[in-house]
Image 1 (cartoon, one colour):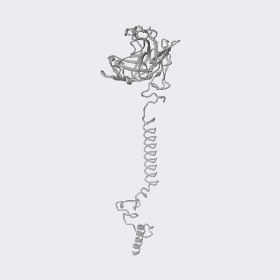
Image 2: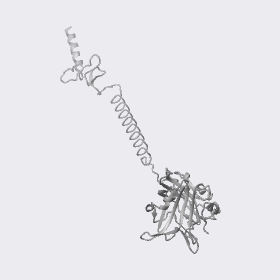
Image 3: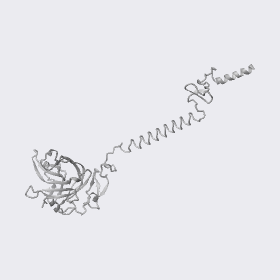
Image 4: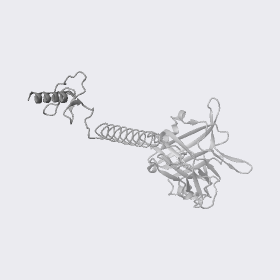
Length: 367
């Protein structure tokens, strides 16, 4: 009986020591390498293995898995982390790219825009018609769509600034060619006189004297040249006023000496625009009949009476209102862009002879 008890005691010692403790010490219950508590728990930082032995948390928490951890990868998934990639997705981050999308950021480009970081400023010549542009380089349009006075077989091309059409190749619908042309241009009047009396007083003259004329052209008459403005003119008063119905624009020219003693010269340019039609973005036709909202006249003095001015030529084209600010009883401003303007003899215009229409407005025709 004593031999049996001794044998059982030796077996108990072998199981308790694990057979590999060099010093033969038995680990306390709940400690590292010690037996688990009856409720399958161990001291803090340790877990109970399937062999009922306390081990470090993470050393071999899942002996039933084929990987190093609780999954076939390095972590809880097949990748280095919780996914097959370096992070939570197949890419470096939460998506297949470096960030949350396939690109460097939230879009396929460098930023949130595939172009120039959200800069939508129009750029003439980039191949795309953008906000603020009338057309893009390389675009063309039937001339007759710009103005009915033009031929239906000719084409206009987009100008170099993408803010209008070059109508150099546009012939007249009637086949009539202008005697001369004013080039297309943009101009801003920063001060509009309220009424003709204020205009005649020229109180804002210092801001309105120009060294270069806004509208200029020349007509070859064979032995001489008819110039607009006069070839000796070296100062130009470009100003406008409005009344209850019309905005009137004038380009008057002078020959001035160094002391600014000036002599008036002719011809001069005048146009009148229907005030109710002047709204930003509106394109108005220039002509004489009622269908046109802008009339352009070239006036001269061809009689012995210097006060007897007369209409020498009329203009045809378009005027686009870029911006306008006119309030009753106060001065305002007006910015406009004109197309190329063709100049015609009063009796031979795209509308035919317009002598009667002009005289009915109180003007005299140059003879």
